[in-house]
Image 1 (cartoon, rainbow, N blue to C red):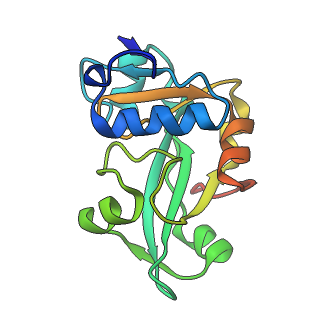
Image 2: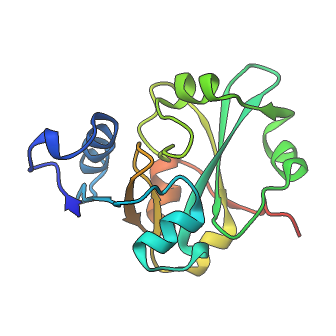
Amino acid sequence: MTNTPDEPAAELPRSAQRVAEVLVALGHSGDITMLPDSARTAAEAAAGLGCTVAEIAKSIVFRRQSDDAAVVVITSGINRVDVGKVEALVGGVAKADADFVRTATGYAIGGVSPVGHPDATVVVVDRDLAHYPVIWAAAGHPHAVFQLTPQQLTEWTGTQLDDVRVD
């Protein structure tokens, strides 16, 4: 099921509606796809969308040790994140617990959107996502996703593509 911001808010969970509004403000259509089954993992999202796991832009959140800033690493669904490579880019990081993720990003684990965070976050984007003309990212809810291009992702997050995957 696809919903757009012009449809009643009751059609989308509140957090997904918030993402749709942010997307529209960024020049995107704001289309959010609600999957009947969870998209909490890249494999679940890919199965629900009928795409490859690699085309899923999964969000992994860390806590930067120097200032407690959220570091959102957006990586291809087939990749594991190399923490050492992330630290080389942003400084030391630690695991983020569920409460930190929700407070820092405004979303629960499994639904962390790359956009629409309540406070400034540090965003790192996996260069492997550039291999795909379109990718799918979480839209604020474990069943909600949206389609975008890797170029849109880097423009909207104000970052560049970096090597963050485990070799």
